[in-house]
Amino acid sequence: MQRRKLLQLLAVTAAAPWVRAANAELVVAVNQTTIESAPFFIRNIPGIRVVPVANGRAASALLVSGMADAATGSETQALLNSVAQPDLRIVLTLAECHYRMVARRSAGIHGIIDLRGKRVAQTPGTSSIYFLVDMLRLVGLSIDDITLVTMEGPDMPAALANKQIDAMAMWEPHAQNAIDLLGADYMILMHPSAYFERFNLNTTTGVLNNPERRAVLVSAVKAIREVSHQLELAPAPFLPVLSQAINTPVKTIESVWSQFTFPARLNQTALQEILVKMEPWAAEVAKRNIRTPDVLARMIDASIAKEAGL
Image (tube, rainbow, N blue to C red; front, top):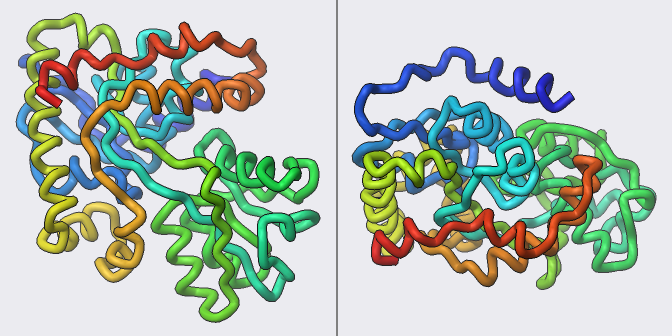
């Protein structure tokens, strides 16, 4: 099953230029649909060949398969793929973001508790479904209390507007797209204790243990920090470039920009806490045993950030 899923994801990006250069250039698989990927899209990072892919699952699949040296993705992707690739390491947090659920008021939804019995769209094996599970848990509900609808993020806004679903759990810009379509009928569902995404750069010990590639990665992290600082200080000049890269209007990006930060750092304590919290969910998805905090801690490697002076 896992192999079939991997092959399906690789097929989506089969046209990409996977042939490695002879030098230490690093191939980085980057989700081309998310605002979180901005540091890789607004400026060329020396030594990095960005390979845009359709989603975080595809990016992680390329890292697991060895076709990429690094990949972007949320904590969920790291947890779900670190069993197939035990050498996977999180080396930098690129972006942080609060998620929003969007629902229709006309469906009788005014709070999270009103999701009981409603049709809620999510994408399996992603932070979308984990966010939904976490939101439900906070009000004493579970997946069994709703009707799950499997759907990809870009398809959710229209489905919500057309009343095929009652609510959606998805990251930006899809949540904002739904709000724009619904007009006065939209309802935003958030909770201060709910899932807070940390979108990371992941690599493998094979890259970390290769002196030449490691040096390139350290240099790239330094460049990412500079770009990220500019994004937080004065983002406006970069938004048209980002808009083109992720095929999202500048106006939409501006509407949600305040929900994002681009820290370019590695907070080991906070990251380990969320990995431990999410691990029971990831284990249930994969039908495996829950790993211990010590095992999860080994997924985080702060040495690159330290060498980069972060």
